[in-house]
Image 1 (cartoon, rainbow, N blue to C red):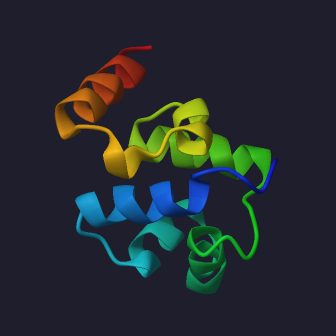
Image 2: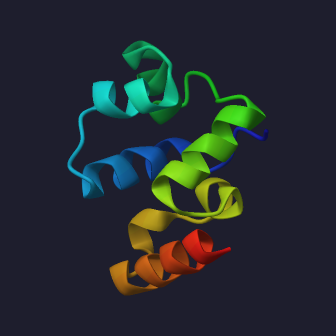
Length: 88
């Protein structure tokens, strides 16, 4: 994966929207909290299978996780995308 993605910021933003601490999401992803933290800070990147699980967990396409700056996407647009992703 290219390092110039929005992944780290998007993971943090989506987690904050859910009001969840890193250890909760890390548990769902079956990784250590430090690993999830490293994804958010862009110290390391998730494997493809982990990226797919993150996409499913947050209800957004992995394309959006990587390429869109979700912090600046209006919440109603994000919610529409999440509904469409869930239905797919």
